[in-house]
Length: 324
Image (cartoon, rainbow, N blue to C red; front, side, top):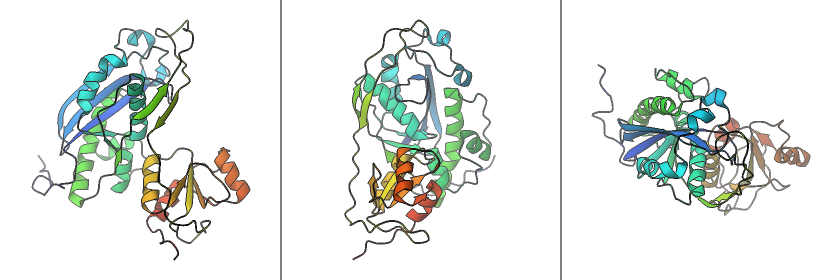
């Protein structure tokens, strides 16, 4: 049996004391979609498994893409509602860092379910294993869970089953965590902000699906307001030159790194993160410059420079100080 190289090495004191590796399966990806199953592996400070837990959840509506997750209306008919599992779920999360693959998605789905139930989830920080893999510069062909698992020799048995996905992630997270500890890498922890509002009005009952089929019109927001840059806007980004503190940066579309993590890094570098695009915007970050979104269209009309996420990540490494 190979010895753990971190066993005798000092463990970073700033690292968390415990983790909750989470996976949720859902009826879809939209804000009004629901959780239909959830799994949690609790790990100690060094990534060793303490226990695990799994449950299905009755979403009170159609289960969505059954061909992906395999959970039919019949299978979920007798499952508990989310309010009935919220206490146990909370006990699994309490005092731990939530770990997930593409953690912003799992966190947002969990936060919405708690908000519907008028409860606050007992988790304050999350860690995305995609972001951690990037911090460690793991040689992955892409950032899918299956690629991370293959890199560490973890065998996946039932993809898109919450319990097996959580197991795979827990087994891949352990060596990632230990590698980070060996190198004294700062973990990419991100604050979990519970939703502060939720209003949803259910539609008329549907003739198919589980119970009533909800198509709510949600109104929600996270208690998140990014501070403006204290530096004046020096103008637009110029290709081949560094970003400069005070520049206004906007984002459009999906990012492989958590959007909020990118935004926080930009703020920490002295940039101003703009929620809309105007003639004053210095740079637009998007992985799909041909998407036709309003921000992309405006950027092209205004002549605003456009870069992808990878290029932006490189630019963040060396942001020039504000002009005096």
